[in-house]
Image (cartoon, rainbow, N blue to C red):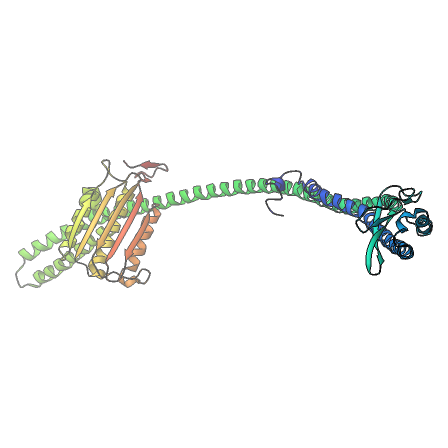
Length: 455
């Protein structure tokens, strides 16, 4: 059913309206059927009867015309004045042929006066049907005989037929109207029941969806809280790890480093006091070389364990010195460094320093770059660090551990532990850009569980 036949909104309302719609469309058809069935048979019967009566009147007119023609032949001039004899000839047709009325007219159409003006049957009442036949004498038409038959009996019979056929039409129209109307009523009732069931199902479904959405929302909130706690614990682990490394680095620097420095001074004195070519001088010189190498290894280990320089000069100066160190290897490094007035937490400073150190190392050792750019800037919600080089680049995902891949993984892990994001933009021959975003929230240095805003 089209949108034009069913008003918009009926399908969703309590009442579909199909019965009323079908009733309005079928009522004209039912009335037309009633009229056709009631009137067709009586009208057809009346038409057939009228046709038969006309044929009968025509035959009677032919016989009357022949009788008058014989009279005219016997008396060509006086026949029209002998009304009594004409009446005698024509009366038989009225009595025997069932004619209701007979009239004679001459060739000019003037009715010939008879004693009664015409020959009329006592049953000549109601509508009449006239038929004429020519009166021929010597192949010349000298007048016409007109015969009328009564249609009253045919009309009365047709009216009698109208009653039973009217009842038949009412029955057929009732069947045509009420059978489909009953079927559509039952269908409409089923549709309404289906709509009610669907409405109940929709209500139940909405409740289930609301409950499931609430459950999913609670699960998501729990997952988000767990993820936040996990990130917080991971950040704490990074902070504790960095703190432990700094403690170890200080111990190495303060204890072992000072002891080795003292030993070196004593060895230098031994070299100066001993004979130049003596065994003692030579052994002291060799031992001094070993001590110098050991001190260098300790300084390198201290640098790898914890960037103590962050405690000494801060993040910006530490990155400046790191860039200065790499510039000694024929690298040109431009810098744009900015930190908040209150500084950053130890965890954020350590990650920024480590990522910069690893990125510069990869650019110097593996990328073949000679120009780099280091950017550290502060945004309302993030700390952004970018390191770009003009090296050979690589295909992301194809770098192995031996060519800096392990260092990239370590950088990503450090950044993600603090809830940040690391993106690497590179392609063969197009250089490499490392983009890091770290949230300005981080654990405080004393390990407090609450996050503080670095501002």
